[in-house]
Amino acid sequence: MGYTYNIEYGNNYVIIKDIEDFDLSSTFDNGQCFRWNKTENDSYIGVAMNKTVEVYRDRCNLIIKNTDKKDFNDIWYRYFTLDVDYSKIKKVLSNDPFIKKSIEYSPGLRLLRQDFYETLISFILSSNNNIQRIKKIINNICMAAGNVITYENKNYYSFPDLQNLQKFTVEDFNDFGAGYRSKYLVNTIKSLCCEKPDLNMLENGSLQSARKSLQEYAGIGLKVADCILLYSGLRYDVFPADVWIRKIVCSYTNLKDCPEKIVEYAAQVYGDYAGFAQQYLFHYARFNL
DNA sequence: GACCAGGCTAACT
DNA sequence: AGTTAGCATGGT
Image 1 (cartoon, rainbow, N blue to C red):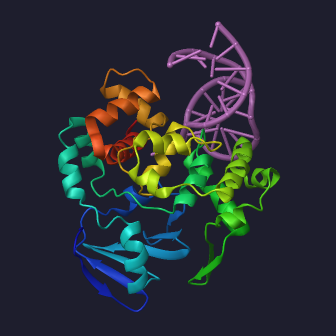
Image 2: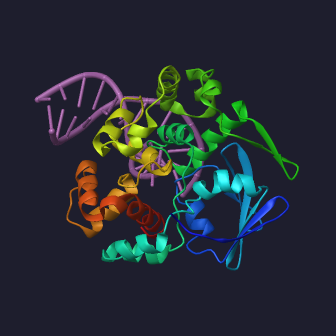
Image 3: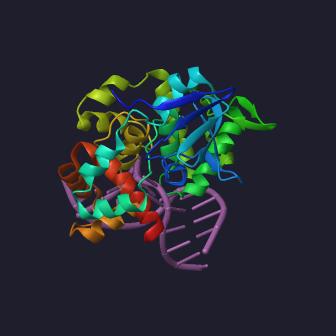
């Protein structure tokens, strides 16, 4: 399964040599994640999985700083979907001329497998919101209840676990800037603490049942449910249809601007790779419409 | 001041 | 089942 990479394990860093299909900007600045930021040196520093790491390219190599062999194998290999064969996915999806164009625009885009609960909370915050503001709200939440992680004399804050999220009130989330979504968060966090969702069912059950069970939570509709399933790496046969996706899909098909119809179309045309198709399209749309 | 942002909920026909 | 107002906030 997956690839074998030529990897160098150093003192607090890991180098993946001659890596293909891994462009930093189109991976981190494409709206799937909210806790990665570009530095002055064109590297990216991210807080994920209770860790802070810095990632940068040196020609064909990818360097991950502030990590080691164990964390690379236990966490980052999976987080960065290094087991996924993007050349195969791109080849299949390129049968569709418009997806092909989007792939050519950002061929090094990757999906990330992020923490399920962080993804769930983050995308409740995403509704009728913009990426810049979503990042700000999430950062406020992390600063208020996350663990401090120091890296190169700067403090970073992990995404809080459910126990810590549970102590926040509607007023707290209002102070963080969540607006009318605050009550959804409090409600959903309480439900999640009370009974954990069945991740195995979400991953392996029918798509219909996975969506339906996520939509039981306050603040989660069809689009947010698909984002949660896709960006936590549970499944790739989803198609989050936000305003950008709706615009661009309607521009190259004669579909009406109706999310359910667009999702149905994507399932038929892109099948098990719909989630990847969506991500290439989204990135293209955001910077070209 | 209007419009928009990785939409959802509730209240209507 | 389909349609629509209302929703918090900050940027353009």
